[in-house]
Length: 179
Image (cartoon, rainbow, N blue to C red):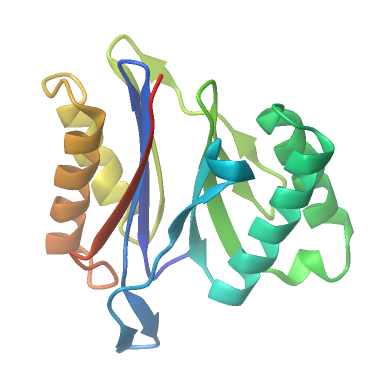
């Protein structure tokens, strides 16, 4: 998936997800301040998406329903959503990826059936998606060992990605879950 950058950092008990605001259609920027990171489950979960916007909104709605069905069980809700995503003829065609997190777990979800938790190191955990995801991921991995604040890591890493990736801009939305 391309045309955005979404980054999650878990450090010091805080979970932060940030994303840029650029929406591209082919080689044209059609919007620069989209909100690709949002709160779910009455604020207990944060999520960000990369890919087709309508597809991502559909997935967010489905995830909200799963979170209502399995309250306080983000992993189970994500596994159930991903099973539906893989087996439902309509959902199978959706082109998006998601990063979602609550206070206990952060996960990457994909239509290929992936429900992945980031590899945690001694100083925290990072995960990213989108066209600028690898740039932000590399920056965050470098910063997680030296920067104490998870939000600062997300903001700086997204700024680095915006300098490199043509599908990423500097209009950043950040959501944080405190311990």
